[in-house]
Picture 1 (spheres, rainbow, N blue to C red):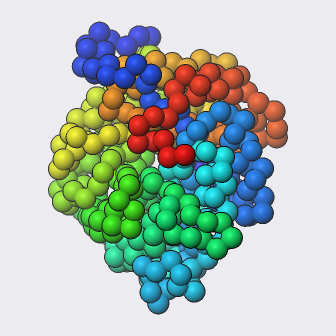
Picture 2 (cartoon, rainbow, N blue to C red):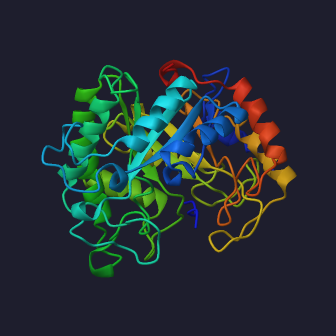
Length: 380
């Protein structure tokens, strides 16, 4: 969950997670301003990313921006309906900067949702696609254009290897509807999402055999209500819906408790083993890497989050995350801090909204230097 622009770890917990990596998960950071930044202004945002020392970032690719009208040949990136201006600029600049992108595609165009917008009052289209195949076709076009071999005019070949399917699809503000007729006993989003993943993974892998298709992208929610599905219940929904065509899983964690403090809340750093158990129950889930693609501690109360920590506590907790046994295990290759710069609705940044930095910037630089990307995350 993130808002738009407009004590001690127990001995049992430590014993439960083998320490299989001497360096721990890579440290990434997301700039939530990127998808609303014009292509011409992207160099300044990339420069800000570089100041953090991060070698991995997460990028929101709005489906509605790249495909404002329905393409005639949707799997062909050269179809004239597609507009790659922003994406070409973004991904080529990250490649030059040697920053690996984790690309998250959501915010469907109206033509893909039957002309409906979903939840009123949000700045994006929360309605899920009417046809899962439309999403898969678009993702095939994306993966073909950025497979590291296609010659993009004026840019050259660009490699994008990591693709997340949607953003927080267990939450109604990102995927609507969650329930048939609003009935909490009739969840439906999981079935649509599983179809999207199952159709998307094979075509993305065919376009780019090196691609990693990340499913779940689960928002941090403790239980079911009208706003969406709880974290562990969401994974159970995906299991029941037959989701099996994926290469990794991602989870978002925004706990109200510090990283080293025991808490029963799910998801949190203290209860991450419960989330892992739910992921393990998916078909093939036990063998999948788990990417934490959003996490932070916010420094002010906003309409979206009532918990706030001091800037110094934020920096302290950031460093503690990378010392956790789960984060130092081979199972979790990446933790993504959200975000680079505060916005008025989500002050989780390393930089202040009006300029200047927080103590967390120095903390993140230290962590990023000690935990560089390795293995499959190294693409440059």
